Image 1 (cartoon, rainbow, N blue to C red):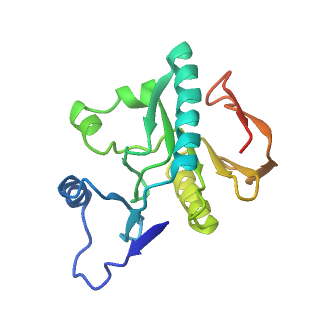
Image 2: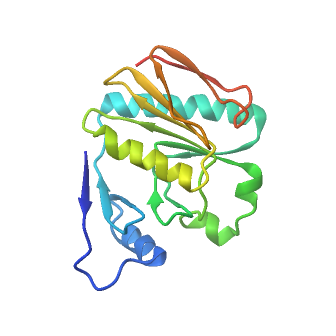
Length: 189
């Protein structure tokens, strides 16, 4: 479940630096910011969603250790997207080349890049439309490949640059395509 705080009544919007400081001053809250400047408070997930998310991170991390093509991130990582939002996907991967192009200071704060690959896992309390909007935000910011896993409807939506969203019914095996060559993940939730 998420809560959106509308800050329109404020005379200013939070800068990226102010948002970073807000997050540092409130470590018990998982916050995101959409391109409109609204703050989004993300609720913690239950055991089943947490287990599924961890398994996806493990699958991606094992592939990444074998290929050494990039860096894997958990849902605790916030990315300052080029489109203006500050988002934390459930699972993210950034190519080594893109990651190494950042300064050390950029790596230590909220990296000012869009991941090349993300996974969003819909929990029981998540509404689907905000997650689909978030996936479109990633695409507009440069995402190459994204998976929106929807266990409630037993579907996976695949997002790619300049292509229509493709929907698969679970169980299915997903491919990392040319973005994550050789990655294959069995999705059966």
